[in-house]
Length: 357
Length: 135
Image (cartoon, rainbow over the protein chains, first blue to last red):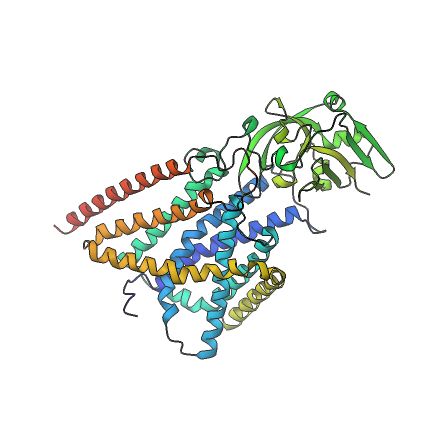
């Protein structure tokens, strides 16, 4: 087509950008599956408790590979845009190919756009983000694999082709835009970039030096007069006042709180290891534990601590953070903080621990 | 090769099929967001890029300067695009301490100023290299 005279519309360019876009989408998909499994573990799956930063790293990779994919996808589409207007030669084969690409582009844009709005905690849609983002992730990954299979000869031809000066300039612009996008946002999870990343959706601020994802006011939490922590197990239960919890042996641990939205922050937490608390109450320590919050309505009012996390001495029922009593927004009177867990499962305003049969 | 490609395509179709099965019940609420991407890109974004490219070709004759102009425009556009959900937040979650409390406009302005200065320096350096190569 006469309109597109630039030499960047060539397999030499689309193959090179495609490789990095494929890597970005691959990382995004795999870390997304990992996060989904950590939050909704199937029966056979155990999310490890070490290293303590594991979830922080996988989810950081998830959001940053998604950010990197935005300029890469746009550059890739620009390289192949003229092909949209080519006259089809083999009717059925071309129609099938175009359909598969349409599915891929729909799912790819959907994942990037919905992810970007979700990290900003804005939901300008009526669907449920978690399930829809997860489902479209499978569609994008599958359609990408089909696309690679269909295009393999063209990809090889593209790598065989030399990138002339104008193509190299376009590729450099693409890498520069990708680097800028990542650098402008990576501060959400990479501490040294906090000040540089001006488009980070989280600042390091917040009460007690730690961001908050759900305030006590938003959760509608009021700590009742005479609050007690109940520890229940099949055949018995025990109750602890806050003073009794504070009188038990305390442990201090430096643990990150890492959100599904990719931001993370490390703090010094002090409290009773959940395992020690169960022992003090006389309950078993090798079963999953259901943690219930004073919050009634939210999606994450309860969480299930898997046995590996229950047994881990770093899994705390924290009473203090960074040397101060937990503020209401951080979960006063007590909250769960466990190594390597999604932030939404670090239940706040805990009122009941229930050892599962 | 042919077998490998067929196997790969079948695997991909399987994965996408599983996704489509999960996605099916959510289509009534999600379809607008699903089709919006390609429509916005093919009908708005790509034509705008094309027009910008044609205008740059007209207005800046020198290829080195044009490369750096297009480069600075591209990076600026990407940064502005990523900033959209930070400054335009329809149906937001309740306010949270530490969320969206940066001064995005000032931060972005500083970045863009540095970017355009860098592009100017880059263009001048590239021009000098060109001259030395072809005196």
